[in-house]
Length: 285
Image (cartoon, rainbow, N blue to C red):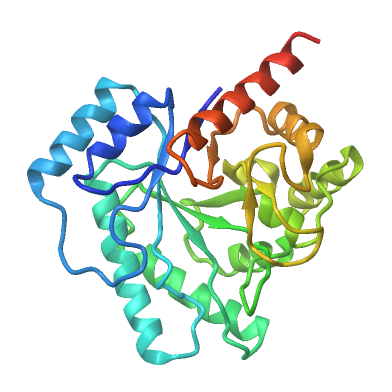
């Protein structure tokens, strides 16, 4: 099972690899820089080399880098839009030096213009980004959202429209966030609801485009659109719902990354242990 967490990259970037290894992860996700600020420096060469050395030493793969929150490729603000494109390209180039496999991105907010307008801007931005990084193998993953505010991506028809508009879509896939799906109105706490969502994804874009699952329970009620995660099995999706997701034949071989609450340093270990127990229980039946 490919299982990891979103790991803090505080301090030196390579310390994130060490943290993931201590937790027993064989895959991981990080921010490569401060997610709340625009870039103010690039990683030192020796830190990049140490990151790559430790990644190989501990055999942690694939590695996912999440785009910072400030980037908005659907923004109607021209200045923010241009900054976002340039920052995204810089992050792809840095991800390449870190030998990361994928960059994970929310699909942006249209800021109360309209969903079609936001999707058009996002397509244009991604086409620029993909063209200007066409010799880079780092993949781009579109993450579904809970749909709070003016965020795009809370229904999978958005991903279909975006993929249809891309000139070079070979490097683009999906990140499926379980909490976001539930909070957006997909009742994946039930067998029928999970199958319905997977069938929808398969019909619209193809289930094979999923390259990562953000495995999170949901704190709020179905369709609330409030983006709040909960510990595995302790939220509205519940233990049985999470168990079905973890062991589903169409999902079980994808990498799972946890983005569950971190109120204590023990929380990641607790959630990882829960997932492993759920996987083992299913495999014995």
